[in-house]
Image (cartoon, rainbow, N blue to C red; front, side):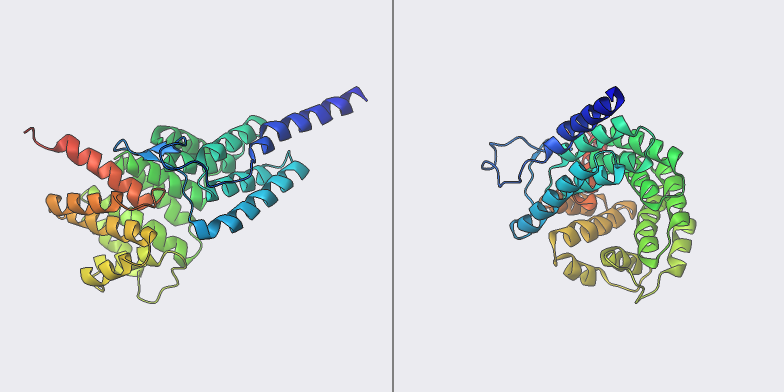
Length: 301
């Protein structure tokens, strides 16, 4: 009986500490009055501002995930679903806290490290992201998403020589054309930054127009551009579709300018990207990192 009571207390405590984070989403105070989710690499406060039209659906998903976590408090999949629902509302700090609570109960769960590592990338804490994703890869060395995000964290730190092996492992784990397109793009950019044009060009051999890129159509367009099958003007038109497309395609084009030796054009492109409102986009985070590096390399006035 005593053991049963202890078990109940443990479960209740876990719900209180993790599911207790699931307060109802709200628009929050006006800009500048609420606590930022992150600070950009350029020093700008970044606030949770999910698209207003999506908020009702995202709030409902969070309610469902919270209820499911209360029913299954010891299930890491329920913790992950809950953290992802928080992240959908751009409540990234709460998502990180939820994954951290989950890891206290499941310290060897690779996917909890994978998801927390992803959100450390979002809030610009790349060192912590690398730590989490390296741990995740040690626990599960055949997961596409783990390698993808570890490669990204290394890339954002400017560790291109360490990003490349992670992306190669990611490519080996890819199981669909859409996933191969996404990782091929990041690996291509990494190799170009390393000056390895030969391996980069080999990546393009399997890239064809009409491939099923799924949600990675912007990456496919960039790869086709690198292959000479799309023009810069065509990509600029595609980049205007959404802020995410603007960040993704814009970064690919600006980065192409950079490793092609046109530093001023690259810097102008990076500045346009960081002015976009969708700050969680990988392309926007990468543009911030590039501007920081360019500033550090700029000659003294």
